[in-house]
Length: 110
Image 1 (cartoon, rainbow, N blue to C red):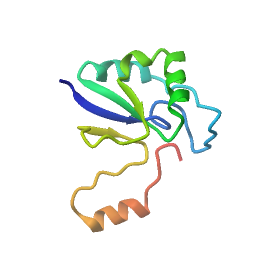
Image 2: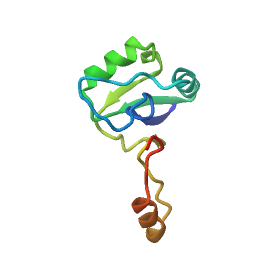
Image 3: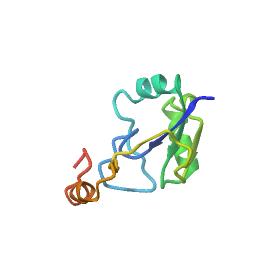
Image 4: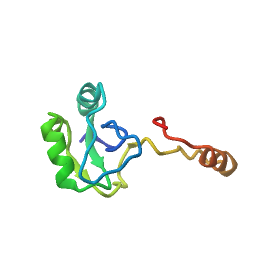
């Protein structure tokens, strides 16, 4: 069985820049299809999002990306090998380093 990969939706697969609107999903990021295609050869991909699952599924289908996705969920699966998120930090066991990274954090799109 392939390893499980979780990928955040907004800001990773689409061009989200912090202006959340539940009725509007930004366009796909350039290169996203090739990214997902390559990853799907080695991983079972789940998309996690705070958005409505049906809206995200519709967006994936409309953009021809659904064929690479195993599931869309609002829960981060504890069995994931890797999580890709535009607002995440990697905790490396050092609280002081983590604290500094947290207080100085900014997503790439800001």
